[in-house]
Amino acid sequence: WDNNNNWLSGDDPCDDWYGVFCNEGGHVRVLELNENGLEGSIPKEIGGLTRLERFHVRGNKLTGRIPPEISELTNLREVDFYNNRLTGPIPTSIGDLVQLRWFHLSSNLLTGTLPSRVWELTKLSSLSIDNNKLEGSIASELGGLTQLMYLELVGNKLTGSIPPEIRMLKQNLQSLHLSSNALTGRIPEEIGALGMLNVLDLSENFLQETIPTEIGQLRELTYLNLQGNKLTGTIPTEIGQLAKLGNLELDDNILTGTIPTEVLELSQLDNLNVYGNNLQDRF
Image 1 (cartoon, one colour):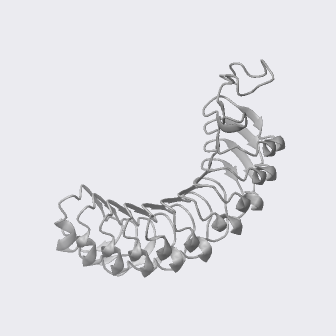
Image 2: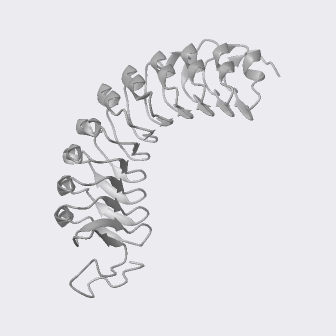
């Protein structure tokens, strides 16, 4: 690996081992080995670092499964395994990590379903599992993650509908990315409760029915992407209430009617895509 300064050079890993940080008691508190050319698997012995709070190994070449022994790290607050080559399922024992704030597993080769115990991690502020091969649905228990600010599940094989319990995330959720899955059903009107939302991306799914007028309640929204679904009906005039909206992507649906004047007059709107629908041309 690229930087292993002082590793195995003495008995004390707290003594200048690269990427290892300890507390005053001499227990390993942080492993910070991002983009360091690491290969091989995460050893099950990792479970012995019971005082570990941050485990960051993003951008390496790690393979194999996430060991279930990770559940023994009950002080963990941040897990960042982004952009490795990890395989297999997310261990169900992950629900034991009740202190977890960040859980980032994007850009790996993980399979199986989202374990139900993920929804027990009620202190999570960021859940990012983009670009894996996860299947199954998004459980209604999602509504219990009331501290969540960022939810990113892009590029998996998730099915089913977006649960109406999404409204329970109204206090903190700023970014919701569920694009490039196989989600079906309607966009729940409860999504209008997410008053802190800046980014909403539901593109490239199989969502149907009309765009809920409640989207007009998302006054902090700057980016709205519903492209590549099977949405019908007209473009709600309520979208014209989104004064901060800079990007609106509605292309490749089955929308009809005209583009509301209220939308065309949005002063911050820099990018509007509506091609691939049955709209009457307003340009």
